Amino acid sequence: MKMFDRRLVLLALLSAPALLAAQQGADAARPVSLDEAVRLAQLNSPLTVGARNALRTGKLTEMNALGQYLPSLSVNYGASNFHGGQFFQGQVVPYTGNPWNYGKGYNASLLLFDGGQRWFSYKQAQAGQEVNAEAETLQRYGVGAAVKLQYYTVLQARELEAAGASAFEQANVALNASAARVKIGAVVRTDSLRAVIQVGTARLALLNARAQLRDANAALTRLVASNVPVTAVAADTSDVPRIDVDDDALQRMANDGPNVRQAVAAFDAAKQGRRATVTSQFVPRVFVTYGYSASAFTSPDFNWGGGPAASTQTQYAFSVNYTLFNNFSRELANMQAIVAQDNAEAALRDARFNAKANLAQLIDQFRTAAQTVELQQLQISAAQEDLAAQQSRYALGASAYLDLLTSQTALDAQRILLIQARFTARTAKAQIEAFIGRDLK
Image (cartoon, rainbow, N blue to C red; front, side, top):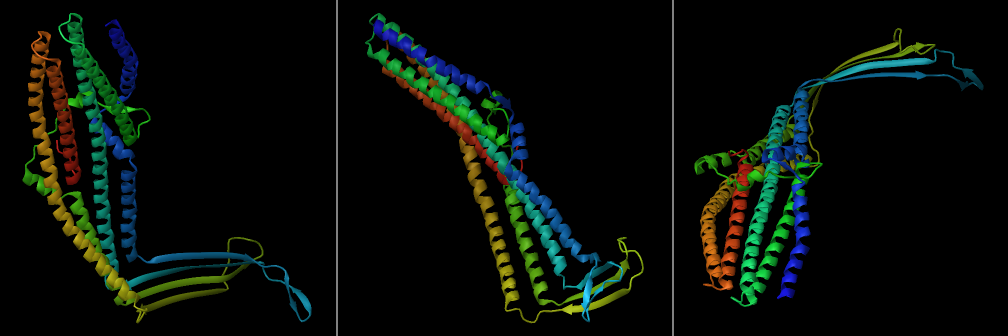
């Protein structure tokens, strides 16, 4: 019996440092609220940064399309230096004029008529910017959902740690009770052996839960781009989400969500692109141009071209441009634009059906998980009462240790199911928010 007690003490001493080190590693992380974690991730994520940069580029694309209504302007200036001589009638004749020669000019060109191609291109750029805006919304809420998922993973790990600590404590209580009864000969030694196994199992579950917490903290730290380890606020562990919006309102939000709005904008951009393609390929283009040039300025020394010009030229031009045949290139471009519009229309139709189907699945997932949370809380209360009764009966010798072990295992299983249900409810709500593109408080 003494050898058996020594083994119990040795097992406790060996495991205590590992448990303490694991706990200290988790406590070293800086707690951050869920809102702060989402804000930091949306600010630093490469996905949201890329989406914001696409908006910046899209704005200049709009300006470029609108600027096609303005004339194009250009200026030119040149200076050259001549020296040396040339071979003339058998003799080298030196260059006798001013060595510096200058030239300058400016030109302007304006497209008078294009059948509306510039206008359609501008509307296409506007629609493209709408696509960028909805893409930015999608990325922002997508990153937010990913952060919430990881945040809830940290909370889940904390709940598993708490459940493991409780199971470990109860296993130790059972071990002490069985050891005391073995000493007085009330039960056989196998009860203590089973208790030792139960303590070891609970200790291992606690170690795994704390390792999972450290891993979850590391993943959360990476998402929020923090230079120091961060973790979820412990006060949020018991939070159970709610959705105070009816199904009809959620469906309207989904029908007007960023996925559908992006598909609508993409379809509009494809339509405007087809119109721009048709007008640019099949409508004549009328241009007017103006140009002025001056040359043969000379000077003995470089002076930026001052002085009268020896030659000037002013030009006005009016032109009509239409391609009669370009090896079916315009027919190919027109067909590609038509196909792009058809594809965008099909994508829009699918986005609308997808809004209905996905939202229904997410709502069912959330409600099932929320009801499971309520049910598991009742199950845990019943399991705790059963365990307390079995502990009292075992202490009085009215039941076997196997009955106590069964009650303890049942309570542990119910706790795990509650933790999983909470995690599912939280993540389902986060996915619904990302899908409709708005927060549900």
